[in-house]
Length: 94
Image 1 (cartoon, one colour):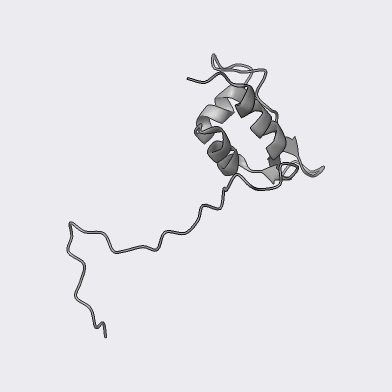
Image 2 (cartoon, one colour):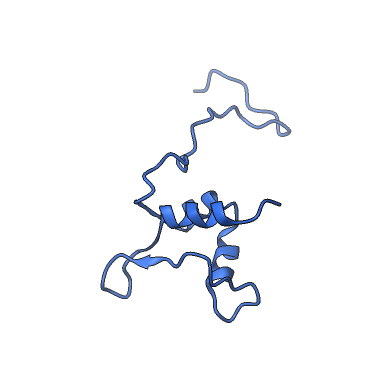
C-alpha cells in the first residue's frame, strides 16, 4: 500500500519543474507547431489563428504563414521558427 499520508485537499502534490520544451535556443531553420509558435510569440493559439484568418478583424498580413509539410490534405502544418523570431523582433515594444 502507500507509505505516505494523502495530500490535503488544499495543497497540490510536489512536481519537479522541468525545463520548457520550447526553449528559444532551438534551430531557427526548424519548424514550430502552433503550441511552440504560441510560446515564441507570447500569443494564444486562437490569437495566432485570428492573425492568419483573412476574415478576422485581427488579421495581420505581416504574420508568418504556416507551411504544409506534405502533399496530403491531412499533412502537418508548421511555422518556420526563424520567421516567427523575425516577426517578434520587428514588433514595437509595448
